[in-house]
Length: 284
Image (cartoon, rainbow, N blue to C red; front, side, top):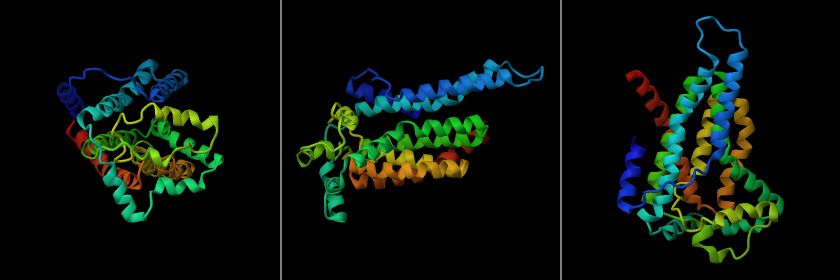
């Protein structure tokens, strides 16, 4: 509800009443696949006469994933409105913080280590952001840990809301855009990875979506709940998650201070999300 009200207020203020395309089709595909698998499992399982039809089990999957799906859709609509709300950017201040701490522009400094194989690894780690959160949710749901699933989904929603607040308070476009003169050439990697860079090119300067790093924030939430749910899954994703943290700066998408802010908002969400979920169910 908070997201909906915020979206309506911003749309009214900017006179922009359109929704942009949904950019996370893997979320829908994963949810649909899980619903189908749950339906098949329920249909094949021996059931008592009082058990509900198998199709209801599939419908419950879609119902339980719906709140986060709506939050994601609204987040993307709000995300694309940030340039209208905050046309200014504060990248220079974020750069100053990085330089004060490290003495260099870290993305530029990391460029000396760039190799095609490393660029490939960083791109794949970065792209795991679009798969890992929903895949962990599906595994939790499939195994029947619905309490932890609800806490996880609420935490993801909370961290997404906190991230959007950060976009509005600290509008920034990142080194690849703001410091383009420092990066006259692309990272080595060949055509296999340049498609990713070209996709980023198409969004240059559009959204103020750097501070905090939501790749960092969402990945930290995934790792925290993977630890609680199944430490084997945590161990499998940890190297990829660590690679993702590095990739945000290596691929010139974020300043280090953005990553630090991503850790901060994820810590707050990890603390707050389960408490919000438990409090809601106590009232219900």
